[in-house]
Length: 264
Image (tube, rainbow, N blue to C red):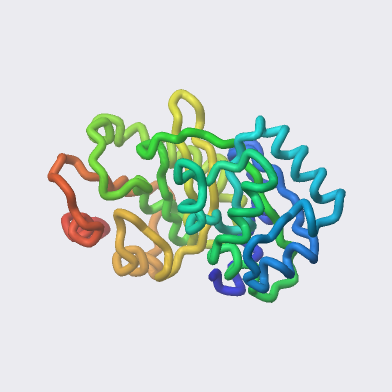
């Protein structure tokens, strides 16, 4: 669960409008009280069509149809990743209301998010389903409003093209951050996730807090947290950390250790 101060700033309903032109298309629908109550009570087998107001049901159906009946779903902050096991093909693909009901009611992640007391509205966020190559997804780490680290989200997996394309990836994401995010997102320390599909510009997937619970993939919290008190010029290039050779199966810890002290 997010810290209370992060609930609003990292909720997609807060940031999506500001970054809509450079983010993955999303349809936001506010959750009615009756459905929220069911999800908060951790009640299984929630049937959206049976319990929810007709207007909400119609809005959700229209959104699913608008997205060609191939939809990825999340709430304000998280996707129901722990409910994938109940799906066909182990995918969080929504094609109808039954799929949506299943993922929302079967997910402890969703239940925990919605159990928090907050003055902000709760949403479902529906996005077009995309088959995204793991090598195109990156987590970017911002410290003191400077982009300091870039890591593949599929870590530690070796991709040979990173060695040649690394400088282009660094330049692309640095320019994208400066032009679209740096002066807009209000926090000093945070992460943002993007997809790069050349020749298109990067596309924002999500924003997240930067703390000891954040998955930093190729980086450790110890080395990133040490940067908090260090002011650096905005011109400093971020470190793009990736495996530069195919060294077989490695644990995340071993892979991080291989690159220790990169910021010193």
